[in-house]
Amino acid sequence: MYLKLALLAFVFCLGGLLAAQPAQPNIIWDPSPNYTAGRTTTIDSIVIHTTEGSYSGSVSWLKNPSAGASAHYVIKEDGTEIKQLVANSDRAWHATYYNNRSIGIECAGYAGQASTWTQGILPALYDLVAWLCYTYNVQVVHPAGQATSQTQQDFNSPGLVGHYQVQPWNRTDPGAYFDWNALVTEVNNRLGAGSNDRIVDNTDPGFSVLSGTWSTGTTAAGHYGSDYRFAGSSSSVTAECEWRPTLPEGGTYEVLLYYPQGSNRADNSPFTVYHANGSTLSSVNQQANGGGWYSLGNYAFFTGTSGYVRLANNANPSVVLADAVWFKQITPAPAPAAPTGLVATPVNSTDVSFSWNYSAWADGYYVDIAESAADLTGATGTFQNASVARTSSHTWTGLTPGQTYYWRVWAYNQAGGNHGYPSPTSFTMPSGTPPAAPTGLTATVLSDTSVRFQWTASTGVDGYWLDIAESAADLTTGAGSPSFQNVNLGAAVTSHDWTGLTPGTTYYWRVYAYNTAGGAHGYPTPTTVVTSGGGTSGTPFDSGGDGNDSGCSTDGGQSWLLVALLGALSAAFMIRWRLS
Image (cartoon, rainbow, N blue to C red; front, side):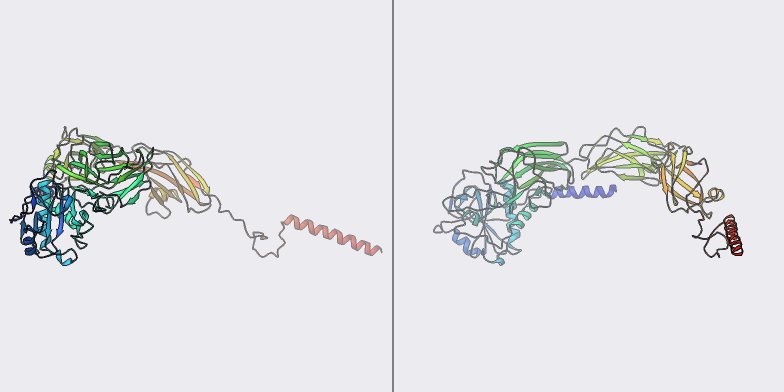
C-alpha cells in the first residue's frame, strides 16, 4: 500500500516538474513596416486568423506597405516555420479596434477548408498560443458572442478570439472547421502549471441544479462556453446550484467566476465556497466584472470532491447567473504531519475504538495493528491495516480476547504522509466473560402453529440461540437429534415468533446467550409449551364406534325409552281392539 502511494507521489512530483513555463517556439524575425509603435492597454487577448492564401505569399504581402495590414505571427502550412513580423510590444494591423489589446496570429490556409487544420500546423499554433498566454497572462478561454455591428463594436471579451468575432461584417476566419475546444484544451495542457486546475462550466458533469428553476441563456455577451444558466432572484432561497470539481491534488486554489454581466443582474449574488476549513460566503455584483474571470479568493481544498461552490437566488432583483467556476491551483498541499493524540479504548473483549487528532492536509488515514512491535514496524506476520478515509476515529472489531496489540496511524495525501504513534505503544484486549443465562423466559401460544418466545436480555451478549424440540432428550442432545430445531438471533433481540409448528404438540425449549468468551443456557418454567388445536372431533352423525350405523345416532338409554313407549302404545291398541 505504501509503495503505491509513494509511486503516486512520484508521479505527481514528476507532473510538477513538467509544469514549467512553456518553451518559446522557434521564431524567425522578419519585420514588417506596417505597425503602430507601443501600446496604451494591457494585452488580454489573442486573435486567430487564416491568411486566405499561401504562407510565403501572405508574409510577402503583410510586409508590403501598400497592404495596410500586418500580424505579429504567421505560421506555415505544415507548422515547420513561424515568422514574427511585428514586435509584441507594438500594435499590428490585424483586427481594427482589437489591435491595441491583442496579438494577431495568421495561420496559412483558408477558413472554408477543413484541410487547413492539419497535425502539422495545429501543434505549432498550440505551442505559440500557450507561450503567449503564459507570457502575457492571457486567459485560456474562448469567449462566446461577437460584435453586432461595425459602428457599435460591442464585442469586448478577453481570451482566445476569432477574427470573425471582432469583424463579423466582413470576416469569417478561422472558420467553422476550427476546433476552439481543442485549442483551449491543448493550450492548458502545454501551460502545465494549470494541470491540476479544474474549470467547471454549467454544461459539465460537475455542475448540478440542486433546487428551483434555472433557465438556459445564450444571448448575453461575455459568457463562458456555449451558454449559461439563470434564475429569478427571491427574498429567500428557492433555487440553488453547485459546481463540484474532482481535484487531483489537495492544496491552495484560487476560485474564480465567469459570467456575462448585465444591468438586470443581482448586485449581491450569494456565492459560497466550501473548502477544507469550512465555508465562505461572498456577495458578487454581477452587474460588473463580467466577460472575464472574477476572483473570490484563495482557499484550501482536499483531493477529490469535498470542495465546491454553491449559488443561491436569495438576492436583489432580478436574476442571478450561473456560468463557469475555475479552481486554479496556487500551491500543492505539503505532506501531512503525523497524527497526534492517539487513544485506544477497548469496547469489549473483541472490539476497540481508536481515535486521533486530524492532521492538516490529510486526504485520509491508515490504521495499522499487529501482535508485536516487530510485525508493526516491518508490516509482516500479524500486521493488518485499514483505510479509514478522512476521519479521526475507527472501531476495529473481531480481535482476540486477552491479546496485546501494537498500533499506529498514518496520515497521507498525494505528497506523502507521516506516522503517528500512541503512548503507550500497545494495548491489551480484555480476556472476556461469558454472559449470564437469560432470565424471564415465557412462551405465549399465538395460534395452532405459532408461539411467541420471550426473555430478559443478558449483559455482554453478542447474540442468542433459541432451541426447541419435541422431547426433553432431543433438546438436551441438540443438533442431530430427530426433532431439534434452533435459530440464531441478534444481541438486541429478546423475543421471537416461531411459526410452522404442529398443532396440539408439546415443545421443550431454551435460550442460549453467548459472546466470544462463551455462553449460558436459560430454561423456562414450565419447561414446555403446547400448541393449540389437534383434538379428535369425529365425522358428523358418527357414533365413534365402528362407523357402520345407519344414521340415527342415540345413546343406549335413549333407545330403551323409545322401545318402552312403543311397547306401551302397542299394548293399549291391542286391548282396545279386543274390547271392541
